[in-house]
Image (cartoon, rainbow, N blue to C red):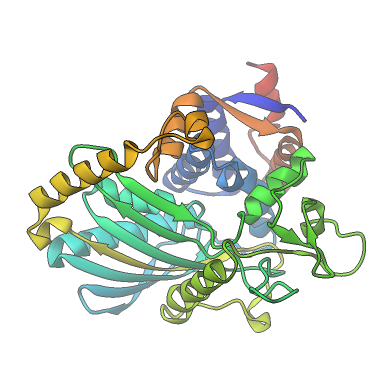
Length: 369
């Protein structure tokens, strides 16, 4: 199914206008658009503007709360816990990272727990925020929604979510190293994009409701009968173990909710909790050594002979390179599949029906290309 090209700048403006119509401040709407469109630009359509319909459903159901300011709970200078108050994740996570970066500048390091945020999107975005400030950051994130999405290794039923692990490492003379991946074989959003595009997912990514392997993403959205299927952890037991660590550190330790049935009472909302370690690498006194060693090691790794995959990629890439390559390719135009486009148009109509205004159908931007 062919994607529909939408100009990037008008798409960003459409997202801003949609959430402004729903009641977001200009600042919140802009942060949301920056993040969602930015995810598409980075090649992660799973976390891009296609999340907008889910956010609208959550808002209309009274779950997502607009224009929230984070509430600082426990505050021990370099260790701080904040509550997102079910606010727009793109805003409250930005606020939380600003606080963590400020504390890291003051104390050299900050351990920050963010709980009760609505979906915070692509966690790599927050690592990039820290890296832009010259900070190293490590993030353990969980999610709570309904129903659960990922089966434990050795299990046939979903019990938790895609629990990403993320690291950002700034470099003085090069682009930052940004590691960001779901602990499931694929992100749930990638299954959604595949479903909307009517394509299959990679083998080993999914099981159906009977626990049998499948490559049909429909098992996550419209199972023929009975319960949904489930995503599988990446790398078998390794992804499962890391997901458990993200759940316990990202949620239980921060005062947030874990993915237990008693916490899955929402209809559309997605709650994220995140434990973040931010520190100033200059405080270690190894800045010059780090740059020299990092440069030499990266050059050494990239000097390896290329496999077929390496030739297709155009060389050996560093973590963060695929996103930078995608941004260059999509700078002016973002592809959106027709299934997602219909959902976006429906979301805009729902905002107009509730609030009396909206930016109109997104599909109109295609006609204006």
